[in-house]
Length: 314
Image 1 (tube, rainbow, N blue to C red):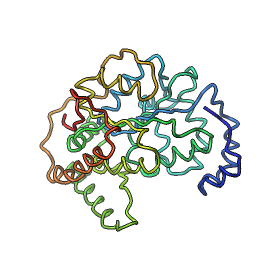
Image 2 (image 1 turned 30 degrees about the vertical axis):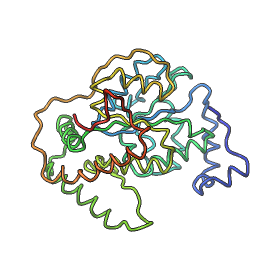
Image 3 (image 1 turned 90 degrees about the vertical axis):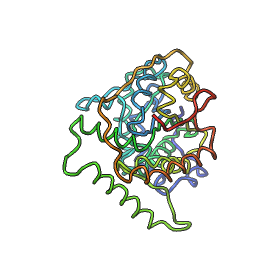
């Protein structure tokens, strides 16, 4: 990867106002970077939460050519996978903290693939732009980046997320699951009423439990920033049905030598599924249809074989 800062007038003219404004700051930070010894991640598992991202990531970590990300001092073990960096809103903060971000990977050989597997990236506003702008500023060819995303039935994803929060003491108990669903649906409905004509934009859940299941909108936000050929979408059912086939495709997609990787499930909870919350399936129905339409538009982005079709079923 090149570490040459963008200097030519032609390239500077094509930079966004934010990029031009922050160029001096990037030069100060640049002195702390050595991409020859510790290059930044070029592969991202961007989501979605509770769709099998942990299973996919820890299977990929078994590959001898993949860097085993570490948590920094004082951070929880979850940071071995989920770094939570590019979903920040302030570009100057991203640039200032980029050397610290790279510390997650500095113990690895420079030739090992760095993977940032943060499942909030897919549905958080501004994340694709943050990745593009920061990497471009540092002279990195963003067309070389690869993005992986996992999906499952959005109704079951919500239930799984709720049960996960319950098990880990992350549900505050001030509201019921049904109340949270009503809030999430209302949030989306309010946003949609504000959209009109050419001014319409893609919805960003920004952590909202319900909005994170609107997969098609999240994908299209990324397609506005990166070429669709840089994406591979996989369903949880596909991974559990044929892990070997999926991992072969993933290794090829991110440029790894193909080796045998064993299936081992991660972050799996055991619980008795509650009844499907009222109104949730009806809310997601048109968004699932929109995902199938997107798949028809960009079939190459979706992993699929004759024996393992893309499906949101569990």
